[in-house]
Length: 321
Image (cartoon, rainbow, N blue to C red; front, side, top):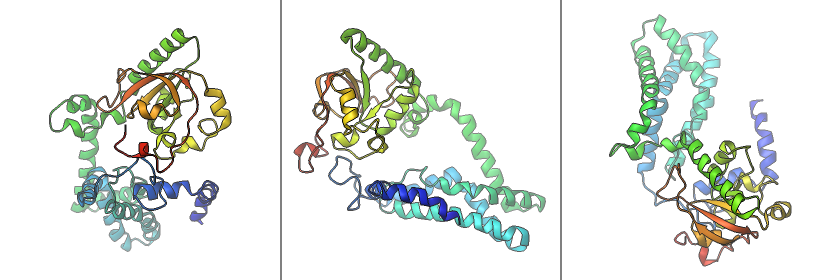
């Protein structure tokens, strides 16, 4: 019965060329994935990816996994809890195992398996209550470990900026994932105001990645439509290609943007942006840019519309800017 909830996802995918399936296949660099004939490519394979996945999961939700395992065994003696506890665990563990298999093929992000932890929290909480009452030392140990990790993370979070600037560990503190975009959006807004004043025309923002496009759409004043050009410049298709108002092949979108100036943000160079824009001027990384080492900004005098790169175009090579 629960699987019926997947029907809308399956129907949507069937009507959109199985976009989710192709995206997952792209992560695995499989034929038919959405990285074929694009500049997106995975680094050379290494078994370290698999062990990295195990370490990350142990750190992120190791105590929950351990408590869920204890709940599985202890529920055998509790007829009322046996079926629901094991059902919840059976829903979550396959997700962790699936991404463990994925990690044997490609580098897995630590958060990919987090959905599996959702149903494990209830068995973990149940066994904590049962174990503490029964003075079960193993349960109390992992419950204590969960508390230490949770409190430790809460205390370390305010020090994240300090830790990011420290040698050795700094490069492993992904502070840009959860802070700093407000300041960057303010710089983007200021640049847009300058373009508007200098040209007398209404500029728009385009990025080469859907993540940055969505962040700026949220933080910019009045939440304007921000466009993601990934698939137009040799990258992967994204949800922005499926929404009519941001689809850069939609005639209505092209007509709305043609001739307007733009602020372009991303890690690509002028060669790729020139596929759709005239009059490019590089500004360098804007203030607050979370990744200033490999991101830059351009202004463009006018948008003219993209011609998608053919698969055999030399510019479609990963080593081209």
